Length: 458
Image 1 (cartoon, helix red, strand yellow):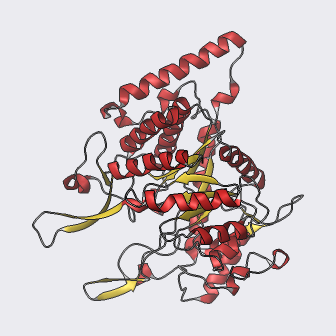
Image 2: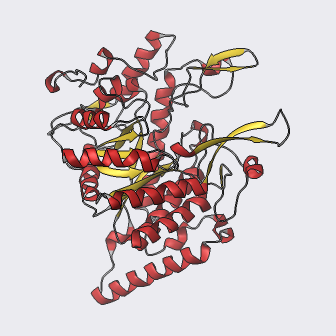
Image 3: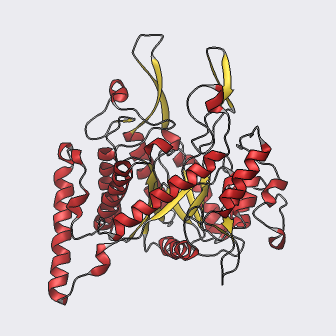
């Protein structure tokens, strides 16, 4: 196993002593340090007791007593930090969790890919257009998407802007939830404007009526309102890609031991950076947060065991969420050896399925035209097929698939093909808005949840 620092030597900065990948090069070191100092002085975005609550719930999910729903944008943008966009994302996650709880009979842990998902890894450090080469767009946390030299230069002050927008997002979500937005007595309030167009609207509305009737029946019997049904827990997550940004928000808290990354509740290590001995694993092994780890076709059983030993040496329950992402055509061959290795080691993990990232295709819009636009998309049927196979494989191994992880939005975008309304390649450009990866739209996400409940219920 690659050498690392010992626990007593670990600090939020020891990652700088080992190889770090997918990190931008800032042209102004003084400006970078100034931004990091300011970021470290700002209040945290989440609290340690919220993080502990999530860890405890994840530990229950490991035992098959809860189900994790993690979803949101592939990459947030500063421009989309708007009330209706945030509310729409919250609505679709609430609707999906309602469907999963009703159909699966398990409490759902709701974790959004928001309030910090501003950075994305890129396959290449640079992008070339018409003979001009510039730094790749790495997300609004680092630079801007416009193809100009000034926009693509990494800008440290964007970390401060991201912190402000993350705080605004979390504050708005908490206000909505505390104000009754998530009241299970009235799930019909969560309907988005275009729910009336969905072919699944009747099934969803029947389900909400049944839940409302059940709650009123319980309250009639008890003679008191079920107060805990008027609000829900909601947690934030993001890929902890930009290590200076994560380290600046990692701190100790009174009356507790260790270090906490208080930029989010559940940070995860991406598939490209989950390498034992490298900087991301070195950083994440020292924080008290639960940690997600993306695993895929290149993840060998030995590498996975090395990661588990480094990130959770004491085998703490609820600490590790393994998010597998293989693709519908590779999961059958790639996932079983990893499950076997974890079971043999008797390590406690929460397995979840990310059926998005292994199923990305590129299509050319404008058939027969050499100048047609190349667009990234995903097929609904491939996404569903990977989820279906994941359930079957875990069941065959007497393992628990304890969650799902989707890139989705509450908006009526056209980025993934298929689904109940049969979106085709030619319809993608009608409302394609993602700056990076394609997302399920509202109807597709709700349909996916309804189909998953049939599996959970079975």
